[in-house]
Amino acid sequence: MLDHSIRTYSDNPCGKGAWVSWNGGDKGEVKCVLRSLEEDELLGLELTGFNHRSHHAIDIGLKPLNGLATVTWKMKCEEEPLLRRPLNLVYRHQLNEFVANALTALKNRTEALPKVVNDYEIFIRSISNKNCLFIRRMVNKGELDYFLRSAFVDLENYVSEKRASVTQVPIAVFYGWSDSVVDVAALVITDRKIKTEGELQMVDVNYPEAIIVTHNGGLSNVGDGHYVVENYMRENGLESVGLFYEAYKVGYYNETDSNKWQTDLVYPVKGKE
Image (cartoon, rainbow, N blue to C red; front, side, top):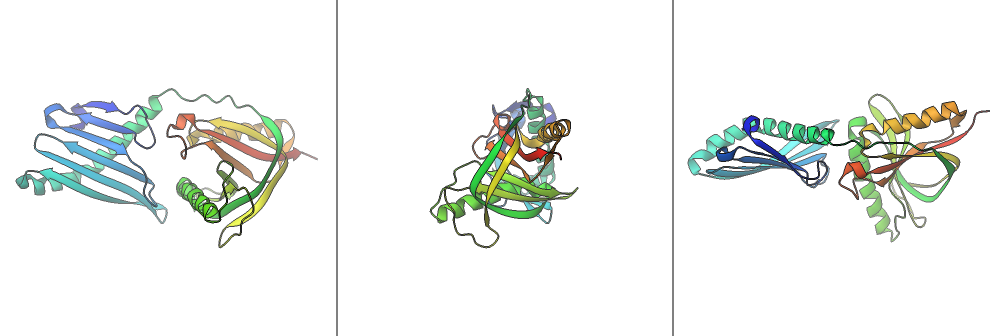
């Protein structure tokens, strides 16, 4: 059905609520929707299909496990009783195909849209942030996004429990990385100092001079912005004197369209002696 059907897409090609559907006329229709993430999920999908004989809904969740992803799914079917068992067997074999086709279609749709053009502009100014609450971890590269998203939620909840407020956008501070792991901290800035517990720490961040570049769009090519900063440092005799960080001014937490995201790349620097 997928090869001979009419394919349509949601207006929003990525993020929560994005969908792709295949309409095969009298053969029925299949629709895949990116849903809200539940606890610990890396990806959540709702797969629905119907024809003149049956209607089915499958909820799929991907969760991290030791650097891999586990798949859980629930299925609800409404069809003629004699069809229930054979259809379940068909679903078992076709589930991977449906999901793979849906994700590929959404990916291709996103890649076909006009790309955000980054005309990186360099700024140098001082940075002074007080009351920085953070949690630092060594995480697998494939789990970096999941760690940051969940850590930012945990930090904001902790700040709220302490009757304080987060005053600026979430920040990821990078201590180091290798081919497989990243040493990173998720950080939020609060309106006052609060008592920390467990892994939580609180510091002040002061950079007398820092290079700041804004990256527009999704983070899949944010490395281009980092390359611009590093090249600027080489050409102007500057060296890094501290930890660089990414400040997510507009991101997944307040905008579903990744083309509208804005991320500040911040590098503390000084002139080479």
